[in-house]
Length: 569
Image 1 (cartoon, rainbow, N blue to C red):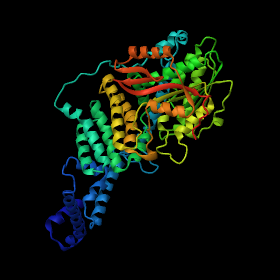
Image 2 (cartoon, one colour):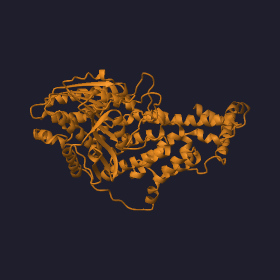
Image 3 (tube, helix red, strand yellow):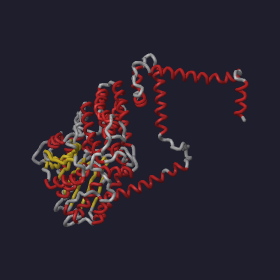
Image 4 (tube, rainbow, N blue to C red):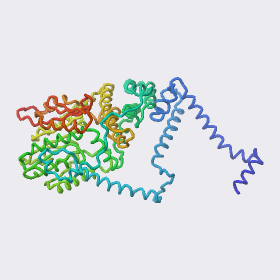
């Protein structure tokens, strides 16, 4: 009734003095808003702005400061209005991600029933993830030598085959169209965009980014997926928010069950990690022959899957298993309960060793690799000491960052030499994108990750959601750090195997020859179980792994060179 009375009053007295007086403040606000909108539209159409309207939303949202360069210096208020408006809408966009999808709000201590129920699936998810972890650890991978494999029970052999993904051995066929010519040229557009970013040519860079984003997609073919993530890295570099992007990516936590499924898919589709595990375990098994105690110092974290397979192999050794002690050196990274995850790995390995009947101890050192000294490792001369690093040293800073003192990369190698291990197993990412020149680095990282995306395109169907997780959370995360970050914020710093060979020798390490039987076994396994384009080869006593002729990973074994008195200082 109250609304009806108001409507009748407005209809009968449209120009009433009291009504006009009450409406006056609101008319001023509306007219001021229209003026600001018109002024901003005029500024956006100036010659200094991008001519392409399709590129405008991309750069406008991601980096509003770029578009303020075209405004006059005598209009600071308008610039601040634009920044405030855009900051407001960006804040609205980010805030909407945290709102309930059904529009129900949580006010103080009062929580809706739906918000309470959402906690329960996480508990079920953790329980399911725990069961999957147990299956993976108890099943492991076929890394046992022939002697130990003969003693494995039929039940374990059957468990190994449970849950394997159906992986295609042939490249997927598809229709050829005019769009393929555009997609094939995406790599050229990416390089041109990187050159524009390097020269601070923001107008050209934004225009190229618009074209790349228009033709790229995280669910397209290999080139489209690669271009999608590389464009995000270039965009973040232009906006100066590369370190923020990388930290946010590291802090994101996908469901544990989905990550484990993605891990199984990656192990099935790609042989690199599996070959690294097999090579390392077989070398350790050979080194411990005839000995009763084993101490493994492991740099980095591999979720314990490698060690569960090794424990299973040692359990079937003739004469009984040795006493095994593993010291894991890992630094806490952003993520979901990292400290609890490290403790969980230890608990599961202890349970695995108990089921396999292997005397076992596990200890985790949560510290940077370069901060760990020999005294922290409690080395026992009665034990066979093996140092293991699988793809971990790529994140150590080198002399390009640390100039005035010994860099962390040489510090760790120097510590390993002082340990005098029976064997140091060194697996690396073979790449040359550690240069300080951005365009050169971008070309190298583009070719490196193009091979990885091509592997997934060749071996896994495009509609596989787990493939999307592998590409986003493994490949894209590393690539974005290399593209968008500089200085100490750039974590990924791999070198090729010849450079590592020279560095290890300077640190006082001597390279061991490869075991021809182990090399042949690995070659046969890859040829029998994986796609024909995977390559396992040898060069300068390094075991090389690659795809279509490009070497992507390399492994080698080392010992301390007692005849060498040189020490990195």
